[in-house]
Image (cartoon, rainbow, N blue to C red; front, side, top):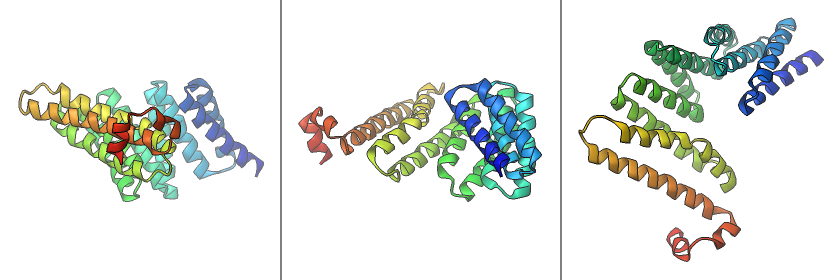
Length: 239
């Protein structure tokens, strides 16, 4: 069906444009995808288009319209049994609630997303949910609750990183997840309590050094030109 293919193309194009920062163009693409999917009664396509539309509207800070689109997507995802799509919609509803200052609702929606993602073994996406949950706890001045959440996100990413084939892809993957380590370090260093201050400083230093070490290992992995620029002592330590 030509219209179905065009709908999918428009849907995916809108998502790509959203990630590239072309928000207005992405908004138009997703609105067109919603119209097309509705016309051909494509519930899967309509659910994805509404979810994408909600995310684009969230990027534009149009929270009421974003919530409306995501709630519509949830109804369809539940109907067709798409747990991955459902988890994405729950997470974005949690982010909307957090932006509104409704941290109780934010926790509920993010917990729903996390449970679905862990149940489906979507560990990369679960790490992002844990990161968002850590942000919510910190917004509520619950630093002690935020730390274990972001620590879990960092641990998940470290495990997943080793499963990425090839050092160039591994470097690219970890670079995209660096915000977790940075947030973890910032949480450790910014706590107002004086209790365990030296332990937190030590943990922050270790986290920073581990991130640098991973970057070095990646650099030494499969990049011969880079190897020539590295001190022999570092090469010896790697071996």
